[in-house]
Length: 575
Image (cartoon, rainbow, N blue to C red; front, side, top):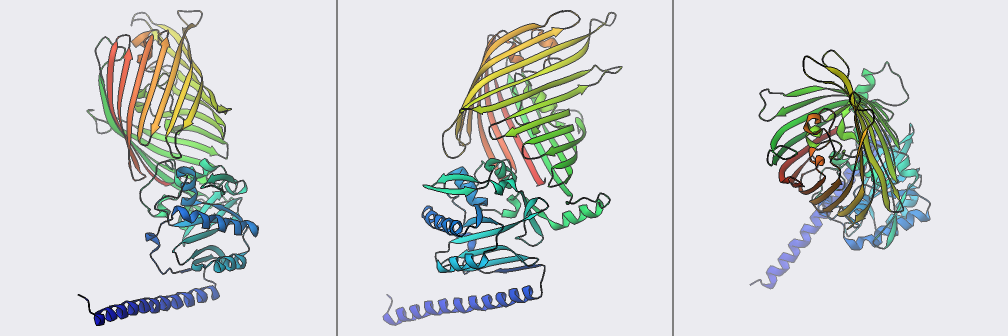
């Protein structure tokens, strides 16, 4: 039992603790403030004041905070301040349609900002205090406010330099973004309000968070590690020294990345099937370094590709160098050289490129042209697989993919022309001839968004048209045609894909041409073929994804199944 004396003592002790906390806080406050003012007085290159009376990592946004967010937006609009919501706040509103549950602040970007006194006065009137101020070369880069409810409001100021936007909010670092993401903004409705998000939103999300921005994270990590547009100063310095001979008006940048793919695919079946039972497994790694200029609009990339084939006799079963030039602006991307096939806007479908070829020949030699807008894309490529020689035949593939959204429907086509100069006949009698194989797949489809996150349903129907000709034996191409229907469901981490083909069997010369002038899946030799893909994704942080799959193949010769594991890992470094 607590006596009244004990209660008084406990209350007195609690009050003493509060008083002691305040005294210590104000000691730190005045020490940091004096240091901050002195550094500004002596014009130190980077100056920062940072002090909050609570642990900023232990606070989170609540849904009711949206009303305060909207009030702050109205203040900025009233004073004509050019702003947008950004970073984790923008990601949550766009992807989740609400605040990310572990996010702890409101993130604003300001451009052409010269109203610090006005902003401070408005925020102080609303009960906010300054928790952080950062200056670089005497220019304000960041100011962060907090209130008695531990609500944090972060304003980052961006400046126009060398045709891009730059922000120096962290010592030794600079963030760089293209002007297009600020000059046109995205009006986005959420919580019943309309907010200003970056322009070209999904493109911006890729540049800011990476290709996996759609995958939610359950923790708040180091934002600098997750930020794709941040760069260290010393990297620029090294590149500038090494390449000082090439004096240009913008800084060169060195980047690197390492991509890896582990695979296990076990196909079961009988000998009479179109595709023999087989198991292939291995691990492939591709380290790359790049040299870019003009915010990586122009890049030279060099890398190495190595495959360890499980069960092979050698430590490295296949290896080779990558080297290519990359040009990219808002809408156009050009690749020229030897580059990874994964850079294509979409993985080519199985009826064009079989899964085993995708794995064992993952690189292309030639060029790739991609034009992409909000409504769709056009991609054309040339893959020169072999040149004519004493022991080799000329081989190349030229093709493309096109898709556009027209009135909510997807109109598109995939296809290629494959040319193969081959030898026909035995050792005593050889005929030098040529084989041409053309595949065209026009289609119409529609995607349905099932939730505010990544849940979706997609449907496509179309026709596969095949023209196949051996020039030494035939005067006219042999035409074959069939119906192709596809449906794909994505629900959380689960996936179900259904593919149905009905028509004339493709690859009319059968197994004799597979891997030479037929690169598509041999199951499409069947006049009727149904494929069901069941998959589950397991994500390890942001660096690796494991796909567990089970596939059912049904043809006129029976049923076969595949079990697969695919691990995709990426260390993005700096691109």
